[in-house]
Image 1: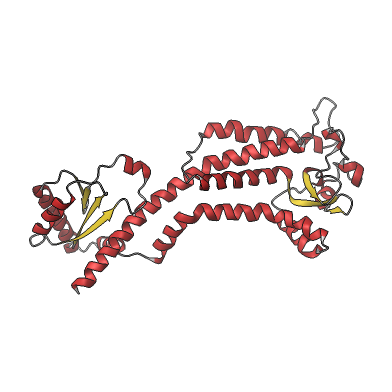
Image 2: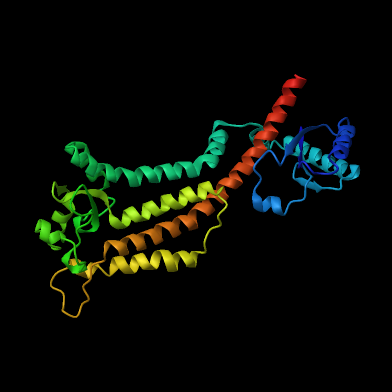
Length: 336
């Protein structure tokens, strides 16, 4: 049987008249009626802005107000003839589409739930990912070495964990830069450990001690990246997820370029035996935090609104489908 769906809003005009027309045509053009209140489902903002309510969908046909009985009759007749033709030629996909349109599967319900809570899951995931590395030095401090080393091992493939580019907790300083960074008034990593830039593997493996404290399992820059992503995610959620995405070239100029320049320009400083004219530099914790925060913040600003637009479309489609399916199944149970 052909399904007729009326999409309306609280201030829509002409709905009572079209319902009367459809009731009069029911005997000659049998159909199932579903009414979707656009105010009660989360309509896509872009679609809603350019859509005139109320409107009717009859099979593949869409009719906008003002409605005429003749237009409804023609659309119903054409849809019924089309449905009979597809049934006569044995089009299995037609029946499958009809069945899917009237049935809410577990996948549909999960997709609808996920579209409503995805940002919550993203923020929670980033909070756990960025927060767990701070637990490692806490565990070292209270002498729970084994679980602490598990955390360091988990993050080792994901971050360089170089001691001279990491934060330290419970020690004399929050960071121990290399001599090459030329930061006055702080003890350097080489001075405190005797490990030089040539000993990369030792610098990675160094966790800390009672005097220096214990390093966080994520480096300074990664901490800033994920911290800024979490901060933007919280702001995005608290503002109703209505922030628009930035342009890709803004992300490229202010997010990617600074972190790339600061990061790659340090590489010669880790190598030995280079000519004297090669510029050797080491970034500072401040620069790592600034460039990391810019990259993380602009990345989230670019991706999160686009992700929410996709989830918004999913909620619109599934919200309407669920409303239609509930009414169709309800009317079928009543008739039986």
